Image 1 (cartoon, helix red, strand yellow):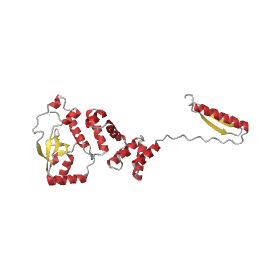
Image 2 (cartoon, one colour):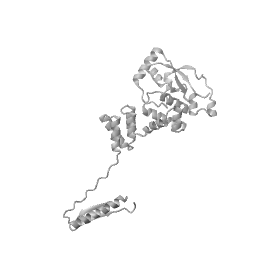
Image 3 (spheres, one colour):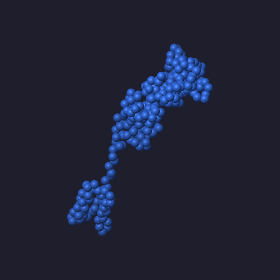
Image 4 (spheres, rainbow, N blue to C red):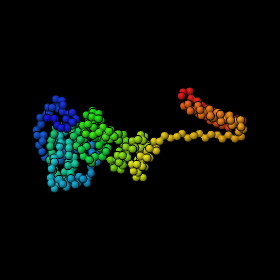
Length: 288
C-alpha cells in the first residue's frame, strides 16, 4: 500500500520501493526506545525552537504522558540507532524531563521520504518563520525534481506563494537572519528584493532596525532609491562682453545643437572664453 504522502509526491512507484526488506517490527507498533539512541532529523527545516513552548509541552507530557508517539527510522550500519522522522518537539520535551525511554513508531523510509515527511509536517504548522518555510519549499523542489507550479498544486498553495517565499532566499544572510529573529517582517523583506543590490539592501536593513521603519516607510524609501537619477546639467560658461552679432551667432549655434539632440543624437558641447576668442567644442558620437 502506498502511503498518502507518497501519492502526493510520486514516491513508491518503482519495484524497489514496492518490495521493502523484511523487518522485525510491525509498522504501526508503538515501542519504547532509549532517548539517547535517537538523533534529530537531518532534514529538519525548523532552525528555531521556542524553549518556553518546549517547557510547556514537557509539563503536559509529565502530567498526561505521551499521547502521540514520535516516528523514527533505523540508521543504516549503526546498531540500535534511530533518526527522527516526526515529533522533534516531543522528543526535546522528553529529553528535558530526563526520561530514559520514549514511545515511538519505527518506519522504513528512504532519505527522500524522510526529508519530505519532516518538511511537510512542519509546513502544516504555523510557527515556521518565512525563511524556514522558503527553505522547506526549496528542499522539496530539489528532492523531487518538480516545478514550483507542481509543488504548489501538491501542497494546495498558489504558485506565486511558493515563488515569493523562495525569492527571499536570495537576500543577504543578514537580512534572512533578521527575518528569523523577527526583527523585520516578510513584507519588509519583499520590499528589499526590489533593490537588487546586496549593499543597498543591507544599508536599508540597518535603517529599518535603527529607525524602526514600518513597511510603508520602507517601501517609500526604496522607491525613492530606485528613481532614475537625472544627470546634472552642465553649467554654461557665462561669456562677457558680447556684442549683438556675436550673441546672435552663439544663440544660433546653441539652438542648432538643441535641434540635433532632439533627434536622439547624444551631442556634447563645451563653451570656453579664451583671451582672443570664444571656443565651442562639439562632440558627436559616430554611432547613434
